[in-house]
Length: 83
Image (cartoon, rainbow, N blue to C red; front, side, top):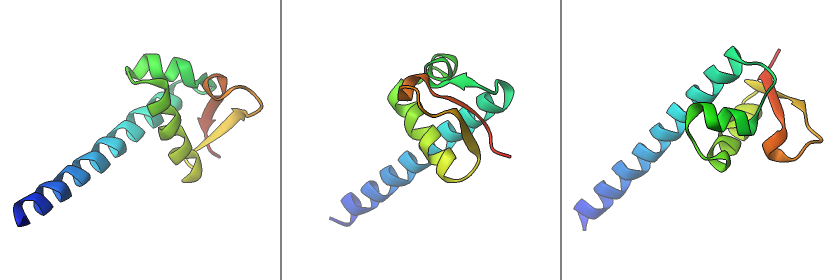
């Protein structure tokens, strides 16, 4: 039982680290290519659009990136670094 709980904890920590790494990759791409759309970011970083959308949502909530155009479909929204 203890082994299962420890393994689950390690798995959860690995998922969080992977999400953090992906956030950093997406943030770096937005910094290098301001105004890039979600779809283009996903292609550039080699991740599914839904994953990049989650990354961008987290980065926006943290105040690191800002929407350039927010009335577009989520995959067509563009982002830049926040001021």
